[in-house]
Image (cartoon, rainbow, N blue to C red):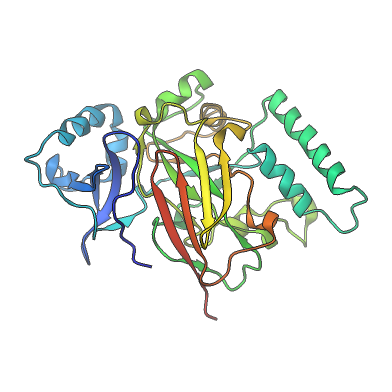
Length: 330
């Protein structure tokens, strides 16, 4: 798949991107909804500038970026034809699990053992009660992903030969713009610079350790193959997304809609997740907080990813990504 794109609409006057010309170096860019791109290294006079460096001084960078959008004398170029990479290289990736109520209910039924004496309706009711209790007791669940799993929003995704049940999980991702440690939910969104799209691919066959059931989940094996997290295309500033708790998350597989759910179904919103993670870890500028995936995964539909599949993913106000699956050749 050609790793470049025509303009994709997003909210607000600008977004951040990581771009390159053919065979050129990556550069942090300002992009506009009408399809223009500006190399921020030259525009800001900082030769070694990176997206992460911008995020490390996000409060200072934001007004400068606003001013650049009004500068018609700057060296703008067409976005179309430029290669679009993942918009940031994070030091840390934090992921929320079991954060969409209907998603978890569907997974419980899909993973149900043939020996389970419960009917599908009984299993759904039991998990629904559990999810409601988690929400009432304010108990998010988070784990750590690897930056090496990240790839661009239009790059091919290689399905490893060992992955028996590769699946999609489209998610809203918050991008940290100010270090956060032990912040309250009321303070948390002050530490979010913007939002982007993440597709957190998962091999369902390796989530649970068959050799050591008491150990539980194996997120390293099931989620962190190279390229298993297509990211981007843009980082849209948080000021352009007034309510991250009311966005539509949509994934199409080969033109068929598989996920189409609102972030309203999240048990815990962005502020609560950032606050919860920060009670243990220190979030750093450029880090990602993935907020979980809504209902409509392949395991629910009985249709998992295979060679040649194309995923079209979008979230309200954040643009769209398209990736093609390529089966690994032994």
